[in-house]
Amino acid sequence: MEEKFLAMWSRFVEWFFAFLPNMISALLILVVGFYIARIFSRYVFKLIVKLTKDETLGGFLCNVVFVALLILIIITALTNLGVQTTSIIAVLGTAGLAIGLSLKDSLSNLAGGILIIVLRPFKKDDLVVIGSITGKVQEVNLFQTKLTTPDNQLVIMPNSMVVSAPVTNVNINPARRMDLMFSVSYTSNLQKAKTILEEVFATDENVLQEPKPLVGVDVLNASSIDFMVRFWVKTGENINAKLALLQRVKIRFDEEGIEIPYNKLDINLNTPLVSK
Image 1: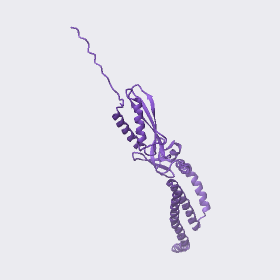
Image 2 (image 1 turned 120 degrees about the vertical axis):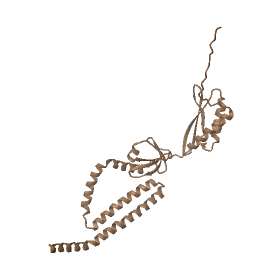
Image 3 (image 1 turned 90 degrees about the vertical axis):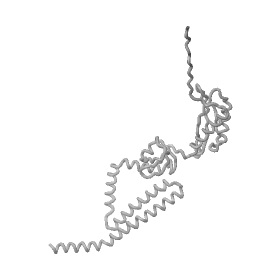
Image 4 (image 1 turned 90 degrees about the horizontal axis):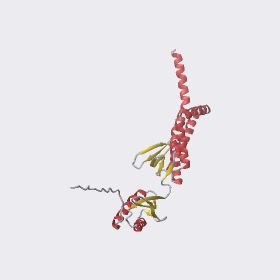
């Protein structure tokens, strides 16, 4: 029994030392290849960002290059160990099909991520409206898109939902049109109110003068006349413009005696005649 054990141990030691160089070289291929893949993928990221100014596209291609190189490195290391990679690839293909069927939702997210990268409906830091959610794009990866809402909440959306929902890119154009309504009473001077609105919107620094702001009567209500002002501002300045303009118009209306109507309740008391 002892002689059989010594013989087996001897054969194991011979096999181990004969196989050791291949194991060391395979390990070196994995370690060195991993670092090379990471360095090369980072170089691809910097190159794509430099050429396209798009970090989303750069990050996507960086991940694709890294994964592709990593697969190639693993196959090379297995070949160096004497493993028949042809059969392994066939097994991986069969396993990939089974995994793909079980992970169809994740694969639809992956397909959605590829569509987003290729079609590029938005890029990082764009303000978008996806379905009913408004937010600034923080990151687009292979499976999900991350948005930061105006009240600073993080929303993580599956890419399959992004590509299937209506997408509005607020920042894609340099200017945005805005419409504001201003009500005046029927006793106010109509032409004077219009002139005040034209002056305010012609001198405000937030309002673009090309195209020229449009001011006119929009609705004749039961208790008010509504002016509609249609104007353009730089993208991203719409909130500041609205706040400043509403305040300026109110101050000018007060100075010029233009009444802004509000709900009033008139109460009439009828005192009955008392016969003596």
